[in-house]
Each structure stands twice: as C-alpha cells, then as structure tokens.
Image (cartoon, rainbow, N blue to C red; front, top):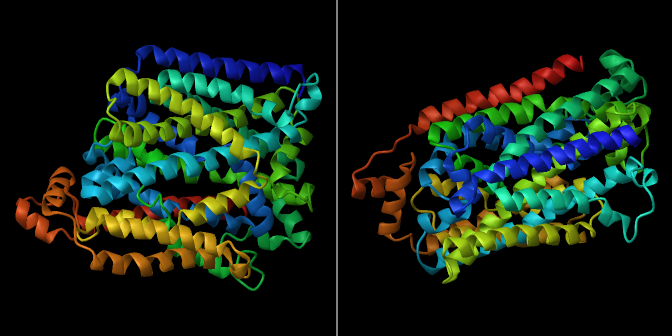
Length: 544
C-alpha cells in the first residue's frame, strides 16, 4: 500500500460518509422511516442493497477457500440457496409485502396467538439480533483483518498503539455506525448501491490480472489439468475423483435451502421487501437480486480461486489466496482501488446487519414489552442499539480464525426450523408450538453434530441430521397441541390471502386466495432453470 493507494481509500471512505450523512437529511423521525425507509425505496435500489448485503469482504476469501478444498463444485454450498431465493421472488415477496410487517419476527404474533406467540417472537428476535447477527458481523470483521494483514497495511503505516487487530476494523466501523445510526435504512441502501458497483468492479479487476498471470482462460484450464487438478474444474461433483462428497452435495441441493432458518427469505431480505411500495415492486426487487447475486457475481471470485491453485499452490490458509494475489499482481493505485472495493463489501454488509439487528431489538423487544413507546424514545433506542450491536460483534470477532468454518457453523445451527417457516404461509394447522419445537430441536442437534461423536459425518450428513431430526420432533408436537385460535387464523388469512391448505379458514372468511399455487410452482421451476442454468452455462463456457 503506497501513498496513491491510501489516497484512493481515503477518498472512498470520505465519499461514503458524505453520501450517508447527505441521505440522513431526509430525516428518520419514526421506526417505519428508520427501519423500512418509509416503504418508499425503489425496487432496483432494494435489489442492489440485497445483493451488496449478501457478500462481504469474507466472500472472496470464502470462495477461494471452497475452490481450493472442493473445486468449483464446492460453491454449491451457496449456489443451492438460489432455490430459496427464487421461491422468495416468485411467491414469498408478495406475501411479505401484504403482511405489512416491520421485521420478519413481527409476523409471529400475526400468524400465531397467545403467550406462545409472544414468547417465540421475543426469543427469535433476541437469538437472531444478538448471537446470530453478531457472529455473522464478526466473521466479516475476521476477514477484514485477514485482508489488512495480507496487504501489509500496517507495514506501510507508522507504529500504532495497542492491538493492531483493533485498528484493522475500528476506523471503518466508526464510519459505518455514524451514517447508519444517523440515516437508518435510506443511508444503508444508498451507500449499498455505490458499494455494490465498487465491490464488483474490484472483483473483475482482480480476475483480469489473475487470468493474465496464468495465460488467460485456456492457460488456466490447461495448467490445472497438467498439475493433476483438472477435477477442480467440475461444475458437478461427479465421478470417482470428485472433490466434494456426494452426501454433502445432496445435502446442499435437497435439504439446506428449505431447512435453513432463512428459507422464507430471512430478516434482511424481508426488511428490503417491506421497504418497497407494493408487492409488485417487492417481487421485481427479488428477481433482480437473483440475477445480480448468482449470474453476475459468481465467476470473478471462482476464477481467482482457480488461478490461485496454479500460482499459489499448497497455501496453509487458502482463504488468504485472494488478498495475496492482490498484493502480488496489482499495480499501485489499482491496489488501493481494489482494497477500497473490499472495504465497500465489508461496509455494505455491516451497515445492513447493524440496522437490521437494531430493528429486532427495538421493534420486537423494547417496543413490544416496554411501556415507553413514544417515537422519540424508540428512535434513541434504535440508534443506541445500532452502536451496541457493532461493539458486541467487534468483541466476538477476536475469537474466530476461519471464515469458512464460521459460515458453516452458522448454517448448521440455523438448520431445522426452515420448513415450518415456509409451511406457516400455506397450511392453517401449523402452530407456534411446532416452530418452537423445530428451533429447539435444530439447535440441539446442530450442537450435537459438532461434537467428536459425529466427527466422521460429512457436512451434508450433519445437515440431514439437523433437518430430519428436528422434523421428527416438531411434526408430532404440532399434532399433539391445539391449532391456533380461529380468530387469529382468520385475521392472518384476510391480510395475506395465500394459496395452499386453508380450507376451514376460507370457509369461515368467505375469501379466496389471491394467488394460484400451481402457476407459482411452474414459475418457480422456470426461474430456477434461468438462474442456476445461467450461472452454470457461463461456467461451462469459460471453463471449456
């Protein structure tokens, strides 16, 4: 990092802060304004914000690590979520928008009734906002530290007092918290738009320099085959030389996407969908996100990961391949620009997670269970919650060492309740006790699957243990407990009017569904072919 590189970084950080504070001028005088932008955010801006949020500075490190260990096919660990994201675009986006919620866990007391619903809402809000959210922010901070160290940032600066790991993230975190706490969601999505463009520009820049080093695409594939690593080019884990276990691949494709706690879209996506003007805008945002997230963003990082197998073989930590190649091949000025793009990826995700986590703390805990509910008090609580969550995540990050390992752990502990979260939209019989049982069983089985007793299990087998083991618990619990009160079910159905098994409720309310379930199923299959087929077709062409 030379003076020119630092100049580029400073310009980017100053520009981001100015943009965030400029957006803050529109004001955030209510929770609706602060957390869902007054439901006035354009669909294309919501889509870009979702795309910026789903990748962090950890993402290129994670992809490089996956490619080194399991080849291109290892990316099915996150490609498989396209099945869920397409379902959100085709079916769930319009349902969430009709529900008119501020957070996804607010739906708990709309869909269920009584004390079980109130307790479930509070527990889910705390669990997602603090432990899950801070773990997720923390491993992004871990990746940021790895990048800073690999780029030799501290070598180009005067000696700093205290712990260098703190200095690696503290200045950036302060900037993020300032504009996030000041402007709310509008500040987040506006800066996300800039940050997505910069982050993808940086990814393509590193890709072009990496490919030039190995002789282009043909040189890359030839070098991998000559070195005995041709199996790393496979898009599917087929044949006896497959680097990804078949059970893990099947777990990704047939279990993970519907069993994970974000099977219904997840809180960050629901926040963006709820911020659009209507259900059509929400659906368009979700469709554009799928194109940006899978078709556009996949291959720059995968190609850099493959090039690293040629020029940086046998790295002790394959996750460091991406920043090491940046340092090795990028000229002065360009290095600063790409470093700024990684900062952009980091800041877009952290700003979203801080604002989103604070929405749970304030809307679903403080406002729900406190007598102090005037807007001024709630707004102060929202800003303080943003600051405190960022501080907790910073502390948590000091106890992590592997980006990919933490990512898998988060997936594992979130597997179990996904199917209940989907079915509650389409089947009247699902009740709060079923969701509580699914969460508890999934957490317990995930912890159990991480012990030495299951050390021989592949990751896919652990996913299946959590998914089907929790199902064996929540299904009987659901039938052994009473259904939700008729009045609660009738109110929910009248508000959302989904397709599915709502016969008794339809009869009572005399209302028909607004959606055609068969048509939506066909559209889901078609869009899965478009998104995953498009992603794989690009890979099939460029990898010959």
